[in-house]
Length: 135
Image 1 (spheres, rainbow, N blue to C red):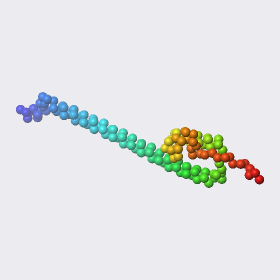
Image 2 (image 1 turned 180 degrees about the horizontal axis):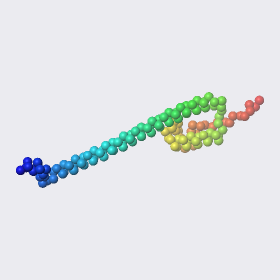
Image 3 (image 1 turned 135 degrees about the vertical axis):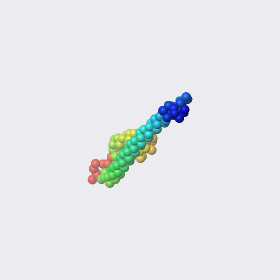
Image 4 (image 1 turned 90 degrees about the vertical axis):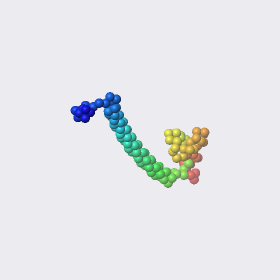
């Protein structure tokens, strides 16, 4: 009798086990799709983060090159040994402190806490050079 019922497409499942298995299989498939979508989003995010990091490093290297060039030009300039006027030194020092406030990890910013206490930062004023040689 059981064979005739199965052959005719009838099934007897009083506990609904087949429906439960089917529902569990669908839940697993949905969860797998959600996990795959999450992994895709994570991979895209890692890619964007890698791009941003590469851009940052390129900018950082460009800034380093520009800084080195500017420093070399400043050290070899005709007026490199001429002391600064107090007002110019103060403006440069204020600008230096502002840069350190914006990015405390900049080179030379460790002394910025001393600058807040009234000591000079990277720029030190000197006596203004005489305009004539007195001769």
